[in-house]
Each structure stands twice: as C-alpha cells, then as structure tokens.
Length: 325
Image 1 (cartoon, rainbow, N blue to C red):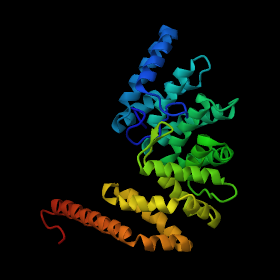
Image 2 (image 1 turned 60 degrees about the horizontal axis):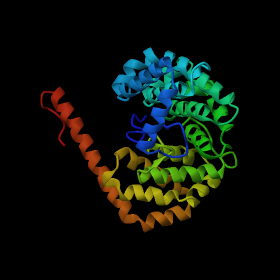
Image 3 (image 1 turned 135 degrees about the vertical axis):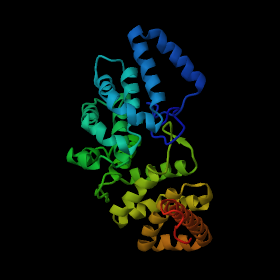
Image 4 (image 1 turned 180 degrees about the horizontal axis):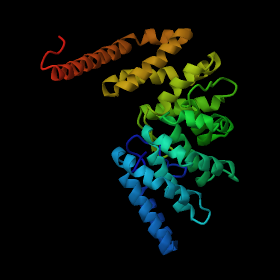
C-alpha cells in the first residue's frame, strides 16, 4: 500500500498508467473536481481519504478491516456512485490487502468475486477495471488466501489476462506467479511480460517510481521472478536472462549492505537456480565472485545475530543458564 502514492511498500496505483502528475496539477484538478461534486460525493471522498490515511499502519488495518470492507465493497461496486468514489473505495481495499493477515477476510467478504466481475464485465480497460485488478493482485501477492483463491479459479481468470498489453499483462503475471503450484511456461507466458517484469525489477532495484508506485522487491518483482524460475522451463529462464535478470540480481548483491536480508536471500536463491541450469549464468557468477562473497559475509553476520538473540531468550528463560555462544 502507499498512503502517499510513492512511499512505503507500495503497490497502490494512482488510477492512471500515464505517469505521475505534479503537485500543482493535482491541486488544480482537485479544485476543478470539487466544484463539480455535490455535497454527498464530497463527504464520501473526504471519508475515504480519512480511512486511507488511518489504515495505512498495519495495526490499524487489522483492527479496521472487518468493519469497513463491506462498505468499501458496496461503494466500489455501485453503478450509482461516481468513478472517483468507486476508485477511492477500491484504493482503501488495496491498502487493507497490503498485509498477509487480511487476505482470507477479503475473500470471505466477496471482494475477489466482485472485483473479478468488474474486470470481466469491462467494455474496455479503464480506471475502474484496472483498479479492480489491482485489488485482486494485492490480495494474491502475500499468498495467505491462495487456497481460497485457487478454489475460486483465480489462476484460470489471470491466465486469460496474460495476453493483455502493458500494465494489465504485467499485473496478471505478478499475481499469477504468486499463486501456489502454478506452472508458468512458454508459450503460455508471453515474452513481453517477462521483459516488462525485468524492467520493473530494475526500477525497484534503483528505487524509481513506475506506474505511480515505488515497488518493494518482496513481495513484488523479485519474489515474482523467484516463483517463475522455480516453476518454469528453460525457454522462460532464457528469456529472463536475455532481458537482463542476472545483471539485476548482481546489482542487488553489490548493494547488499543497504538491502534487507530477505532480499539478499531471495536474490541468491534465484541466482543459484539459474546457475544450476545455465552456463551463461554460471559464467556471470564467476565474474562477480567478489560480490557474491561479500553478500555471503553479510548473511553470516545475520546468522550470528540470530544465534545471539536465541541465546538471550534462552538465558532469560533459564535463569541465566543459556547455551554458550
């Protein structure tokens, strides 16, 4: 989620794939829109903005989720509401979905079913149908409701969207790759989607805003790549390598001192899978041997810290008789 559209673990889009607007542009549009809104719509938009900011914190969304999902879904799916209200209600759902604990709650409230219906009934890709797909994607990438979503045939629904161009095809790839036990092989997975995924990974590595989002590596393009490499064939892996995957993995390792431990571990897992099946990948690893060794040293420090923490808890629980460290 992203309360300010470009901060935090962001997968929340601004509603348009045309790029970010300046603050001045946003203020002018808001003033223009406000003059055309009736009092009831203004009240709803203020409420939605208020909720969005409140539930940005994880502890708040866990408390609020059971109480607001039904109303957000009602606003999002009502043809009587203006598009701004519907989109902002869906943005609240996206923020609610931005933690693994809420996935099952959203599915139980029918959010996936209704968002899928809005996508299926689209006359063309517009802000409503794209934002509905965003909600579905955020429900999936934390993998906590995957059994429920597979029962609802989410994998079949997403496969139908893989051939769509631009952000829609990329979003479908990201979501589908995070569903459990889904095989993603050529030619079912278009090469253009894989290339777009690596470009997205590059932007995430460099912390650039893309599609109005500042992307996390996990969950995000890096975890997506990992799941694809795990469940794909040589043709898909070669396409990823041709698109520059190995170069991006090595960039992450080069910056290992500034990265989360889970990002480094995932990067090494992907690189290892590639090295086991690709001579080209093995050659690139050997050329970057020093970089890999530095990443290994940093992870060993984390392992040492984990042992110390375990020893601390053991000592506290046993009256100071913890294991030697």
